[in-house]
Length: 170
Length: 155
Image 1 (cartoon, each protein chain N blue to C red):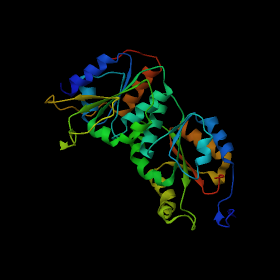
Image 2: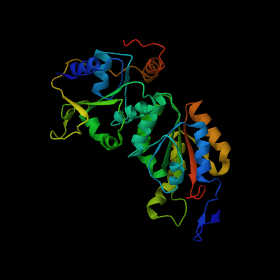
Image 3: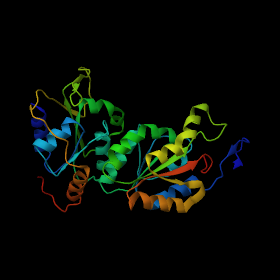
Image 4: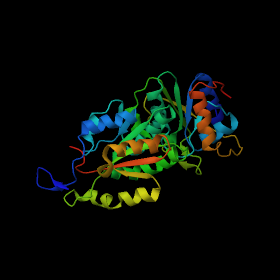
């Protein structure tokens, strides 16, 4: 942990967003997502990025891209999992396809806004309950991206790459 | 026209296209009464057929993608409409003003659909039970074979 420029505790910076986007582009060729303050710089650095209006629609668009031969990556904050789950179960899981989902784990830190706190508490357990693959970006950094893409596109797993607040520059 | 007649007329208007058909009776009747290898049958994920079609169309600009939705599904997928900018995507809504698959719960009959939606009002039914579409593995493989050009036969 470190302190941000306002003196608040925050997770370690492990990669700049531009570099993170570059790494993702090595393994994925189609991107979608919903606006999120923790991922905004990454999203801005991705080519072939298709903004979606809701997380469930982002999932369905990503599934269509997978059907057409793409390697999709979805970038959302953890609260979006609430909308995304049924769409994932009804597309990627049902048709035995994989996808890489970059999830910002909002609400882990005490100073974050109260509306994020419940999601900060349940996200990891929820992913575990769903049986999805989970990779902690802070622990595995670049090798985690490689492993996540391998799980998604070679083993057809729904795979979450979990990014903690502070792991990327905002 | 009834649902099957509407689907067959859409097929005839878009030879050579890939069809994404929403879950529920649209997929069931299409798969049972007029099965085609060029149709991807949604089994779940209600409201997402338009978004799936958008994803396909974004990657495969070389083919026509046709989404066949119901009005109940279309209302659920509504917010994706604003993001649709794919010239190779056609969107049909079969309107019967109810959720027929789940027992006929009524929908508002005065919905004004965007101008680029092709609305077909359907009436009546086939009076025949239509089973669930083929298993997802078969649906996926048939679509992949067709999309990859290994077998471009329709039926």
